[in-house]
Length: 140
Image (cartoon, rainbow, N blue to C red; front, side):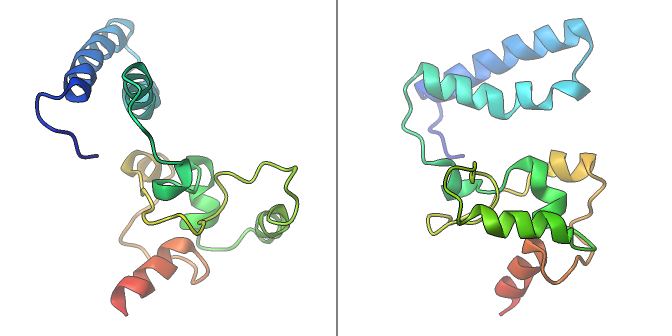
């Protein structure tokens, strides 16, 4: 995320971060509130300041829920992958968060999700996994 120092958004993020940190520390739930202190904080500040946002699939097309099923897996979950393939052809089923689109130019590999899922970015995963596909693309 690129923000100019002293901008309204930078100031709002700092102020809201400070407020939320104090709130979370008082309750003692810092570890459980990663989204509250991360993506939800950014979403709130961007909405409050009406910052123009890119569609989700430009930077973060894969939902955090599916990291271990689409991005980094040792063995494929064939049932999940089949459902995901079918999802493409059924527009009435929610399709966001399941695949890279033509708009995608980056994939956010969130450290917190990898940590919570006991995933290691230095390991080798199944050759179908998006992570291994990206590694091959970078190496080529």
